[in-house]
Image (cartoon, rainbow, N blue to C red):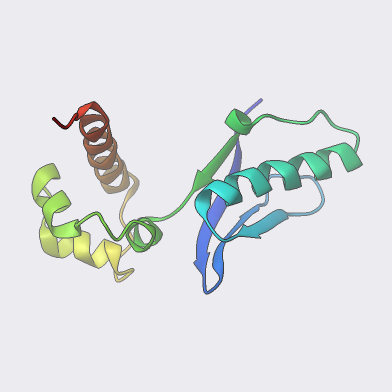
Length: 129
């Protein structure tokens, strides 16, 4: 089974997510934080699938996606200027992506995402004394 894609958006009360991957109706939900949103997405998906007589799914069958602007809004702790320097991208250009002024190409999106993932892998290996 291919992954069911949910688009995540920041709201004034937390987060929302919706998917149009279903036959008849979109499935959506909200939550105060990303962890709860992930659980609610799985619950909403399986409720819908049960109602239409289809097999329920597991968490790894669902993908939460967001655009570059939403990413930098969610994770304000990540400095766009420093990330741009790290991945060899113009600081001005990444700032425009982060502020929604420009939309990155798939290639640029992949470059940004790989930089973020590389940083995450490095941070996961750090230990303090």
